Structures are given as C-alpha cells and as structure tokens.
Amino acid sequence: MKANIKKGKITIAIAIGIACFALVFVMLMQFKIVNQTDITAIENMRETELRTELANWKAKYEETELKYEEIREKIDEYKETKQSNEETEKLVDDELEQVNMTLGKTYVEGEGIEVTLRDTENEEISKISSSDLLVIVNALKLAGAEAISINEERIVNMSDIVTINDTFIKVNGQRILAPYIIKAIGNQTYLESALLGNGGYVDELKKIGHDVSIVKINKVKINQYNDEIKIKYME
Amino acid sequence: MKNKKAISIVLGLMCFALTLGICVQLKTVKGSNSVISQNYEENNLKAEVLRYKEKYDNKYKELEKAEKELEEERQKSIENNSYLEQKEEEIKQGNKIIGMTEVTGAGVIVTLSDSKKDASTALNVSELLVHDADVLSVINELKNAGAEAISINDQRLVPTSSIVCGGNIIEINGEKVGAPFEIKAIGLPEQLAALSRPGGYLEILKGATVGVDLKKLNSITIPKYTGVITYKYAQNSK
Image 1 (cartoon, rainbow over the protein chains, first blue to last red):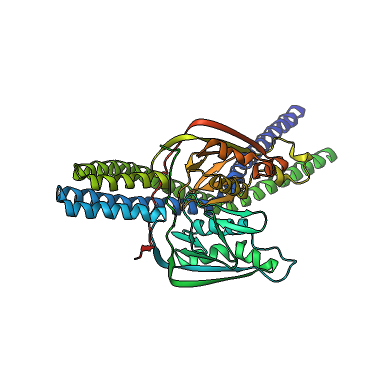
Image 2 (cartoon, rainbow over the protein chains, first blue to last red):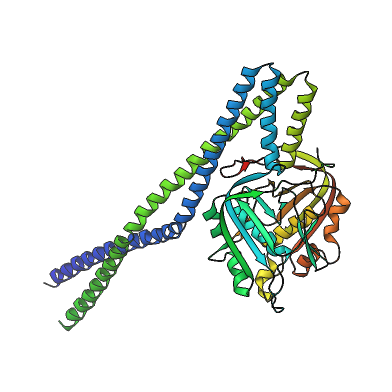
C-alpha cells in the first residue's frame, strides 16, 4: 500500500514536471517572438523615409533617361549633318546655348514666383541681412528653382551674397538696395511652399515683423549674368 | 490530507499563472501580426529602392558613354573649322564652370567637424555641432574670396545645388553626407585662406567650439557632378 502511494505520487510529480516544462518552454518561445517583433516596429518607423528615397531615385532615373535620349538625338544629328557647315554650326550653337543657360549667361523666362522683402520703419526689427537672402536662395534651389535673381543680379554657380561693413548688401560684387526682389523660375507651388508654412523662412521673417510678400507669376523674366565668368586657377 | 490540499492549491495557482502568461503573450503576438505584414511591405519598398538605384546607375553609365560619343562626333564635324572650334572650346569651358567635368588646381581644403568636447559639459549641445547654415556660410565666403569650383565631401556644387539639414546629416545634391565636412575650393589659395581671418566666419565657428581646419594646397582635384541639370519651366528668351 505504501509503495503504491509512493508510485502514484512520483507519476503525478513527473506529469506535473513535464507540464511545467512544456509551459515554460512555450512561454520562452513566445518571448523570443515578441522580442523580434520589437525590432520590426523600429524599422517600421522608416517606411515614410523609404518612400521619399524611392521617389528620389525614380526622379533621378527619369531625369537621366531624358538627358540620355537628348544626347543620343544630338549624336544622330551630328552624324547626319556630317560636313555641312551650316547645319553643324546650328548644332554647335544649340549646345553652346544650353551650356550658357546653365551658366546664367542668357535671359530666361518661365512660370515662377517673386518674393519682395522690405525693410520696416520699426527700428527694433533688424534689417534684412545677406544671410536672410542666402537662406531664401538656398530654399528656392531645394524646391527646384531653375533660375534665380536678386534685384536683377542673376545667381550663378559662384555667386556670393555678403554684407559690407554692416551697411549694405552685395550680390556678385554689385551693391543692391532694399526692397529686395527675388525672382525664381520653377514649379510655383513647390517654390512657394518652400518658403511658407512649417518652418518656412519667409514665415519666420513675417513672425519677427518683416514685410515680405510672395506673388506667383506666369512669366517671370530673369536677367542674364552681366559679367564675364573667368577661370584662372582650375584646369 | 492537509498536505495534499496545499500542494494542489499551489499547483493550481502555478498553472493559472502560466496559462495567463501564455494568453497575454499570444495576444501580443496576434497584435504584432499587422506589424509583420507592414514589414513585408517595407521589404518590398527596400527592394524597389535598390532596383531604381541600380537602374539609375546603369543609365548614368550609359549617359556618360553617350556624352563622350557626342564629344567625338562634334569634334569630327567641326574639324578644320576654326570658328566652330572656338565655340566648342566655349562649350568645354562652360561645362567646367558649371561642374560637369573633373577639375584640378590650387586652392584650400576646409574641414569642419563636430566638437570633440564632452557634450555633457556644454550648456548648449547644438553649439558643438556643424549645421547646414554653417556650411552654407563657409561656402558663401569661399565664393566671395573668388573660388572657381567647390565640393563638399566630394559632392560638386552646381548652380542648382542646395544644402539642407536632415537631422545629424546634411543633404547636398540630394545625397546625404555626414560630419566631418571636407570642403574643397579651387582658386587663389592666399585669397581663399583669408576665410580664417580674424572676424571671419571660421573664427566665429571656432568660438562656437566647432572643429575647424584650413589647409592650402597646390593641387586639389574636385570631382564632377554626378547628375543631370534639366529644365522644365525655364526657357531662353530673346
């Protein structure tokens, strides 16, 4: 009888032991799964980032494709014209004009915006500075501006915007006076929203009390760069 | 008998606790099912990004080849015509200036790095970091000092280049670059080095305890812009 009871107890103990083991095992497995899903939650946050990244590469690819087709066309045209001087000259002129356009050596027009910044009479508000203009030009470029000028001074690759003696602003070495009129050609909505709303620089300036206005214009005309662009040091 | 009762109660409680634990966990895993499907979506996105990157790389290589071919074709067409040869020279010079070719020359290399100071000792951590506005100002000063070509971490500045802050990195030409920022500029080295003059912007940055270094060099190579400049809105007039 005693042995019987003992046997029964041992069986029960073993059964319970196995059950406990199984339960703990299942729990551990589940812990592991939950841990892993935590990592995916972090990765999950980057989905919007991935979408912008994808849009970027798509745009870059399409742009390159377009440019490629354009160049292939030009190659064919050169091949066709062969030694006919007149036609060749036209092709060379076209290419030169395109380069000059990017250099800023041509007059350009197209849809865009005009930003006007006026100094206020209020002496407590600081005047518009060269770095204000610098930041706005940078924001416009980010928004895809294809050509920019400040008070008719065309912004080219090596254009500088500086304050001299804390008194006046020079663009391309030329003195400019307030009001400052920044013209930009590009997608009107993009250009405008780059300056307005959510941290937009023009909004910031307005908050301080500056007098800034933006108008959309269907045909913005932008001046050419007036000086010769000389290079002396680079090969 | 009493003993047996106590044991079964303890066991009962244990079983209950374990079951509860499992139930909670099962629920959590069920809830994260949607996360897993989103993760799948994300992997798809990642694959798509890589696919387009590769497509772009291949297209860009093709473009480079085509550009070379165009130059050859152009040269063939204008042979023995000094008038057109002069124009072709202008095209080449123009491409150099806008950043479509690699260039070399004397100049300076400015390196801006985040401060090595312990952030916990600073009043304002932001002061120890290089910001996009700092890079923008240094670039502007280099242009003012007569720079002819500039690159930041080998991203060539072209007329459409912008510099924007994206967290602890900066985006130039749509490419992300991180500190330290190595700014190369070609031009008269003495004049470019004036950037470190007293009261100049580099001095101001040093005051803000950002790491600043300026080196004059006889020969610097600045890479070409790896992208295209196209126009959708602007047209030549006149």
